[in-house]
View 1 (spheres, rainbow, N blue to C red):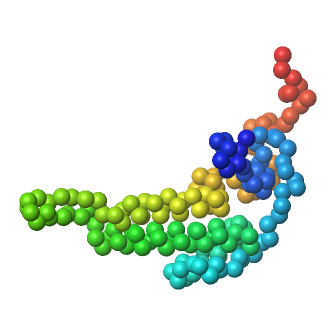
View 2 (cartoon, rainbow, N blue to C red; view 1 turned 180 degrees about the vertical axis):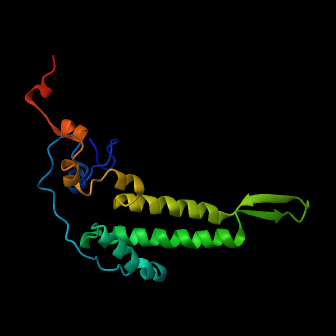
View 3 (spheres, one colour; view 1 turned 180 degrees about the horizontal axis):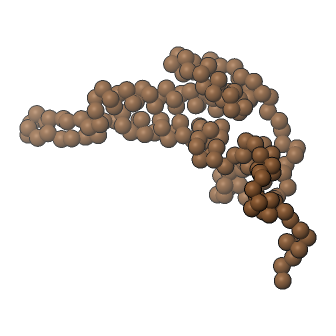
Length: 173
């Protein structure tokens, strides 16, 4: 199960499974193709505003060790969503959340939502999904274990008991 369009959960890369500790204890795909680390080239089609934020986004991704040369389109989508969110947010701040329109024939005022509110909401949703794809949103980071050796070296008595395992632990009567 899993993968795009299958109806199940999307597959996690092996590196993320290793970082999380392989909770399911299933065999890991050791022959998964390795991505080339480094900054991808900036796509020609990217807007000027998105090109302006490209270096700062790449710096954040490189610091978190999730920047690969093969992720050019994903980084471009992240930059575009970032720019769209802030442009829409600026429009909402300038024009407000609602627009009041006065109908000239009847003299009735109608209140409508500013279209920039919807654009900001959509851009934020895309921005969140991009961060999740790179594993950088708070919920994705909470599942990662950056220092698995620290858990093993914990000196509390309860952790020593939890780490200890005997042959009898697997036997179920």
